[in-house]
Length: 151
Image (cartoon, one colour):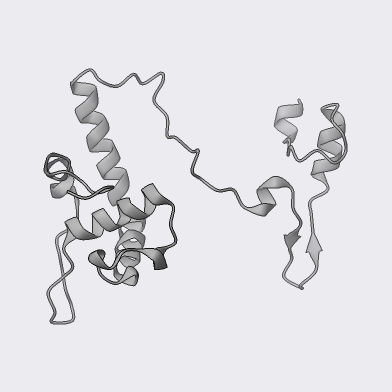
């Protein structure tokens, strides 16, 4: 087993939750374990898809599996099955359970940057300044406060 890849025990937990291989081109379908290992490698390293090591095959194939599985809810089913397994074993505290978002990159717009408008000009919602003023912050504050939070 290489770094960032599933062990045999981990694979046994999720293997039945992945869709069956269905190749429509006459070629054999991609190995689901290899594709899941490729996806895990990308998610763990934070590397771009194009930097996927050659041992996983073409990066486009791995990305296609990732997109399809995400769209079809495969990852949600895996998460749910693992949560049920941990809950039965008494190893999960639902009051403290959360997803670690430290590796999730926010867009520039999330930090208050100008947003592009369809006509090519840039615009930013006026809510930042008045919401910041209502909260007693400087007008250039990047905190986007909603009206519900101000009430």
